Length: 265
Image 1 (cartoon, rainbow, N blue to C red):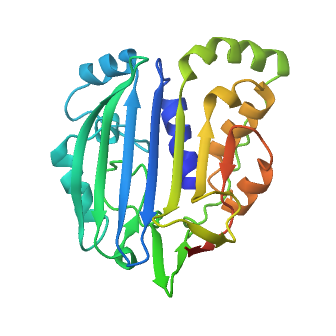
Image 2 (image 1 turned 60 degrees about the vertical axis):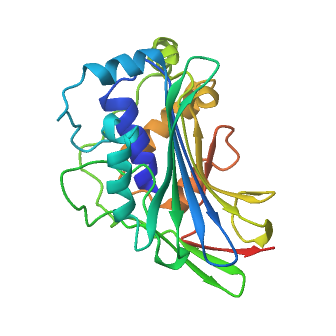
Image 3 (image 1 turned 120 degrees about the horizontal axis):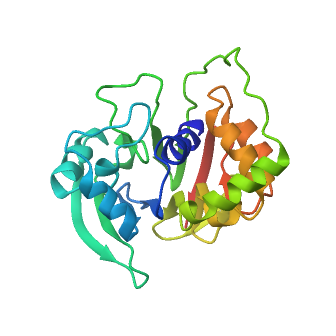
């Protein structure tokens, strides 16, 4: 799970966003073993202008590439091949919201959920990263087991950054708040016919939330946001530790288990 937090950290720290950016991923699992993946990326006008001004080969070492996060159809087709055997692009649709945000919604068709190897918000890093492991699914008798393997653990650096004084943190938060307005990243799993039960930490109706980070809510509490940014830089933090650290915090939902089961209706 820390790879998702690290992705958010890379988005916010290295690129200093000047407009909203929202990405969401919904994996729907059907009882017959088929499924879909809906990935939606929305950006504000300022972010759209920023992306348009970037060179075609512009990338961010260690962080997501915005042109890949809002893929054209060709890149969506390329991504489908990496998601596993039998995954194809079902649709690629432009999205325009009333508040001015624009982006795309890509729907992938999954022929066999058991063959899906899913990495949400996959960044373009110029090659395979063996530290990153995909989310996998195993369906049997109407129950799907979701494996959320942690990344290869990394040792903490000996260079500990001093904590920022509270007054300085509040001053920076006031300046940063407009930049993070509307930013959100979410990963969810849905039961195509509903969910009868699940041992997941965040179950609501027919939806299990693997991760949901809402910056509008986080920015309301500077101390919470500060802890989040510290965690984004801590590559040794486990999913369980992250889930425990932010348990009950409004604006953050993280699944801490490495394996969950979902019984479909």
